[in-house]
Length: 272
Image (cartoon, rainbow, N blue to C red; front, side, top):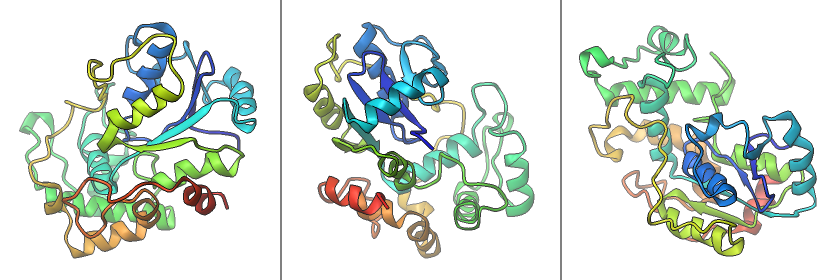
């Protein structure tokens, strides 16, 4: 299986396991800048030069050898499951993608037909009942993850622990896992451990949010989207994410972690 979703600087200074919807665009751009002294011109997910990615065949032997021998500092980044699934909904389900189309072609029509979801459109200024539609989407997300129907789960809403575990199971070890909610602090720890060839001031770099601006804005506080049933579904899908990465399941309105991540626990529980 190898190391899907793994990126590495061209200089092999750091290795990063991408977790979708967890500041991956910004992290990728920082890695690119660390080696080249400039940001990639465009979406870093489209970059096919200047860094190594598992999706690029020529990079695979280099990444594999590096990770298995723990040659470089390895890290990843996580996010509160409540805000992550909401972000996935507004970006991937309601939003118009960079190519001007809906995400995954027939996915949104399928959701409208099978789950009664509404998503609005740019023409009507995305007017729809966000809370009702989100809760129906959450049911769909649970169905994809639990029963793999009506389709396989998408990387943007499958559990973070699932993404992170593939790296461990196949022979990798993390030196650091940090929270998007404390991004500067967490990313600075990476830069301190592996000083880059080109210095980076995290206070001055832009945030590369490639999903922003092409969908509806969230109209309500996070907690308004999650009733008792929604929270039950969240725990069913993301129990490990809440527990391992120390997020507050009981209070959807609290996006901040409640304690430190125990790397030994993460490796033990996700390394089966």
